[in-house]
Amino acid sequence: MLMSGTEVLAPAFARGFAVPAYNISDYGMLTAALAESEAVRSPMIISIHPAEWQLMGDEFLASVRKLAEATSVPVAIQLDHGATYDQVIGAIRLGFTSVMIDGSLLPYDENVALTRKVVNAARPVGVSVEGEIGTIGPRDPQTIEEMNEITYTTPEEAAAFVAATGVDYLAVAVGTAHGVYPPGFSPQLKIDLVATIHDAVPVPLVLHGGSGAADAEVSRAVKHGIAKVNISADMKTAYFARLREVLADPAEREPHDIYPPALEALRQVVRHKAEVCGSVGGADHYSVRPLGLRTPRWVGAPVLEH
Ligand SMILES: [Zn+2]
Image (tube, protein in one colour):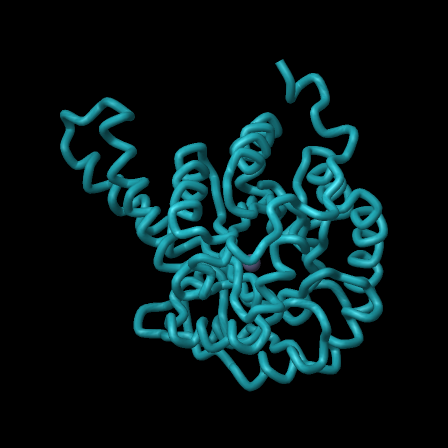
């Protein structure tokens, strides 16, 4: 069932588990992540980065919505790292039910103003908003020095930011970076920092860059207020590694033979991440019908119906 981000995260946050958010960039990945989430009764979030959105095109969102509506576990559709106000509005018009506006590289006051503007536009149509304070660092950091580019979120700034913007949940920088880490580097999550931020702000916290972090560390962070864990690199790496193995045989040419083993590898990661997040069986803690989500009336425009 399709829900807003807040509707998906609230029961998880209240009960101390996290909802995994999977970055999806093709139809097979989408259906496999949904199917495995159903198999383990885990709520989930389909996360689509602007680069992934551009790859798949606007019409793909109609499929995402149809499949999410038909799925038996709670699902939200999230714009990951929205860069501009216009981009976020475009996502809301297409039917995303949760949007991230990432102003974390802006000066603090500008981040507040941009995020507040997005919240003012999204809230009346029932779409939830994720903001970010602190910076989570570059994608695929190559060196330990690049890892040190993380600017940690402070509890004081987090509290002020949430109060000033009204965001529904907050991405925090607590020791992880995006993508794949340098060889030999194991990120150390600052659990104490997660806990003090959790004490300082009333909204669920979001962990970006969860791939590569030790499972036990992520599970501990979930116990201290992380209610959404973004998963991209671990899942894609497993999917494409299996695909490469299959394609090593030049005789393979049928998609229905090539994709299923890779999608099975992806499903194993989805299952494992649900276990790490504590969300296995979590779907049973939701009321059957979504409570507050109103479908914006522009969703279902002619391009989406035939
Ligand atoms: Zn991120």
